[in-house]
Image 1 (spheres, rainbow, N blue to C red):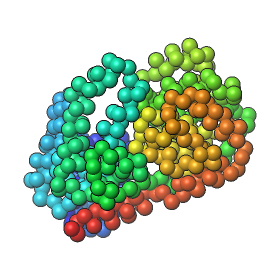
Image 2 (image 1 turned 60 degrees about the horizontal axis):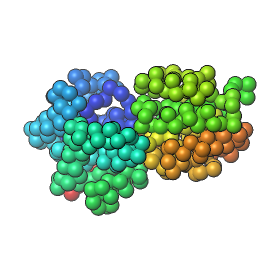
Image 3 (image 1 turned 60 degrees about the vertical axis):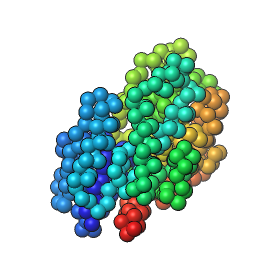
Image 4 (image 1 turned 180 degrees about the vertical axis):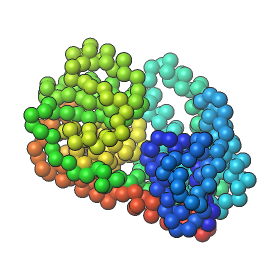
Length: 369
């Protein structure tokens, strides 16, 4: 079988990129022919030495709107010219048999963020060519008669797609992301001689609720606790916020960190009070390392959290009182062995081989139709 796999960028190895690379390797191992359609000029080094893997560069146009629209239109043209047996897209494109909604539901994200945006920001969002183009692509994708399967990475995303676009539940299959269980495994608890540490990992600080977390830091009973932030983003506004709240000395920005497992080893709890996340990988990784997680009900990864057992799930990210209380609770329980045990158990069944196996079975079912 000759499969086309579509992803605009493969340079940063997030959940979608890791899924695609692992799937490609397994497809090739089973003797299938694979062609990847990407806007990148060259294939990642993980695929450089794999025979049987084709690479087609998809042209994109200038600007944010040009990038997504040009990729969708040109990918459709190249798919039609390729005569593939099955097309599996990890982007909002215009010609695919199966689609992985790893980036969530854009209409849901816009709806959720309105509660936290100012009136001018809401007006700008409603008129933004970028967001209007994404919504148009998303609607055309889910309305396409040729789309036979949608893979969601959480039950939350499955529900959102069904609610916004009237997609039948049986057309959407939930396949969770994997966790590298060799890299992310139960770690010893941090030394009691170090200050209690709250860890925030992620890029896109506004969406992931960093401002709410800094406010909660100022309200903690654990006045010596510090907040460590790893990820890419503009930090000046958050540094000013911390200074005004009197917690600037307890806040550290580390930038992007390739060995994030080292940060989990030094942390007592992971906090991610996100406004919207389809299924944050950092939550799964932290749980695998035995760290409790405080996040929100707007995060698909909250499906792995038992409130009061291995973390907490807030109804809203701006519940500063609830956020501070949850963090204090798990800082108090730093020596409770039941917490790391429950955290590890929650994600013990997640792995990339399992993700690939389930995805392969789903795609083969589509191909057989």
